[in-house]
Every structure is written in structure tokens, then in C-alpha cells.
Length: 231
Image 1 (cartoon, rainbow, N blue to C red):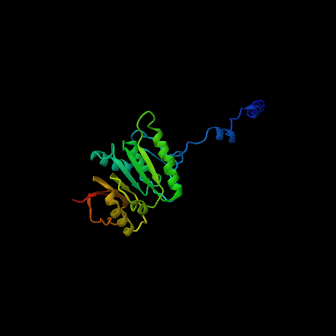
Image 2 (cartoon, one colour):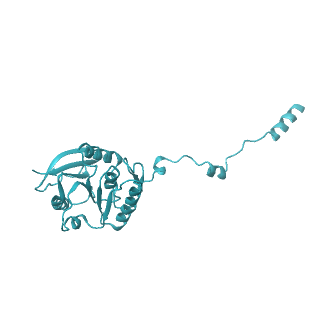
Image 3 (cartoon, helix red, strand yellow):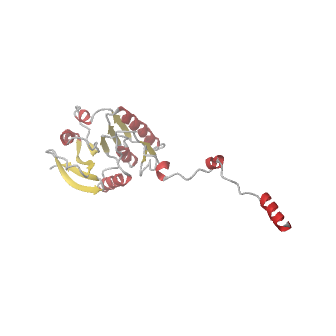
């Protein structure tokens, strides 16, 4: 009986393990998933003077080009010598990520055309972020044009763009895209390249007289169409 009493006393006085508290949980939160660390409302510049800088994305109404597709686009343009010192036009610009990637990689001038006010404001803020990356050097000239694509292209005067990047909404009508392409032709430099980024479910753009298809490349749900001025 004495031995049983000793065991009972030991059991009563045995130290208990500390229990997790709400304060401890708050002090040491569980690791966040990549999706939480990098919210969908942000994208980034891939390479160049502003490489790795994060850009804001409008909350709705835009579809940013993926890093993989952007890298493919600029690998092609750089192999053709169409980025460094170029005059670049980004139509349906949204956040401006495509045109600003060109700016980061050495384009001399970039024009971002976006009609939606909120998206245009985001593009302006992102333009300032990229411009600041050139502190101490020559920054590209970046303009944001708050206008519809067709209105902008129908303005008098020519710009001689070396590259035109067109990433329209998936629901843009084919007739409207063709009208955009037709009005774009007088704005292009002699050796310019035109990119149309579309859903793989969309038909091939109807190329107006004056533009000729050069190549096409599929990346999952995205299809890239490249065209140049016809001879």
C-alpha cells in the first residue's frame, strides 16, 4: 500500500507538457502557400534593368501574360534584334507588363494604350516603378494613352513603331481585331514585327492586306501569332 501511495503522489506532482496557446500560434504562424505569398494581383518584370520588380495588376478586366509566355516573346524579339533601342507599342496594355518588359530590356520608347481608367492608372504607377530602376542611367520614354485601341490608331500622324504587341481580351470580336490590324499598318516601321496573343481556342486573325503571317507558336492555352509588313 505504501508503494501505491508513492506512485499516486508522483502522478499528482508530475510536470505536464506545455500546451499551444493562441498567442504562440500567432507568434509562429504556419508557412504561407506560394499563392498567398505572391497574390494574383501582382506580376513582375522578368529581366533587364527592372528585372524582378513587382508590378500591380488591375483587380478585374485584365489577363496578364504568364512569365513563360513573356519570356518566349522577348527571347524571339531579342533574337531578331527588335528590343534594344526599339519604339514599342503595347495595345490593350492592361497593367502594361508586356510593354514595360520591353522598356526594362532596353527599348527606347514604349507606348501603352488602355481605355479602362482603373487599368490605365495601374499602368501609370507601374511605369513609374520601371522608370525609377534606371536611376543614374538613361530611362526609356514611357507614355500611357487613355483611349480605345481603335481611337488611338485612327489619330492623325505616324509613329514608326518597331514592335506592336497586341494582347486583346479573349472576347474581342474578330472584326474589331482586323480593324485594329488594318489601322496599325501605317504606324509601323519598315522592319516592324507585330505580335497577336490569343486563346488557343480563337481562330487565326484575319490579316489585312499589308500584313503577312511569319510564324505561330502555342503555349498551353495561349497562341502567339507573329506578322510583318508584306512585301
